Length: 291
Image (cartoon, rainbow, N blue to C red; front, side):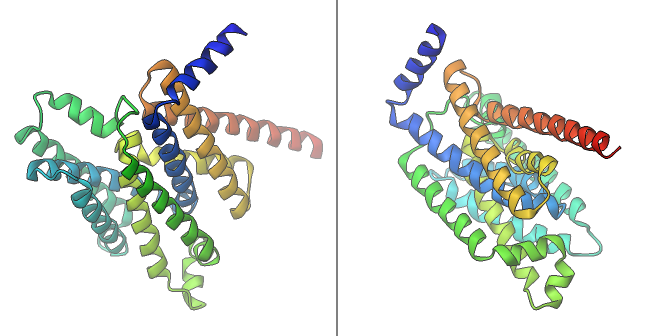
């Protein structure tokens, strides 16, 4: 009982600081947006676009550092969105398939970014700068009120897009050729999904780092698919899982001083295994009942 009270008192103490509240708000919103996009990306077998774009964002941050840009968002955001468009266009080319295009841009951006950070170091400790960018900051007290409002606006845009174009997104997710035949502009909606994914990845870099962003997209969707079969149910379950894991990860990182991004991803992995076990036992029970 006393341990529970100590934990509660610790959380109450930390949440007196606005920056901690900012981190929680941003984390939950990013998790929600990532889960909504994740279901579509996983079902379209294009889930690693998150990994590719996150490496592009890493390279863009290195470029911003070399140029001495104070607000690196002005460099990172346009380059990541442009890469999302190029990935989509290149992935549709018969000469360079989607997975090859992602690997090419991903590895190239990561290598160039690391090279630039070594050639033009922003501080004496390059290893710390690289680890912070790749795996997220070890401190959650890095977000500003501008980051919060930007994330709120982006979350509202993603949710609005998803609600307004739900049926179109559903159509191109399961049968893009049929959707195109019925008059749905598949290329336009694919482009919209790619651009929004790029925006979410740029926002999420401060929280989980560029290497862990794809985990926010993939794991909640895969967990939900272990139990639910309908598109709507998977999306709702994925969103709930993602938000809960993000909240739990942030709270645990506050209590135990662990890296925020890694803790959130660890929570997602744990939930994935729990859902896999649940699905396994349910299928076993159903099989025995039928027998």
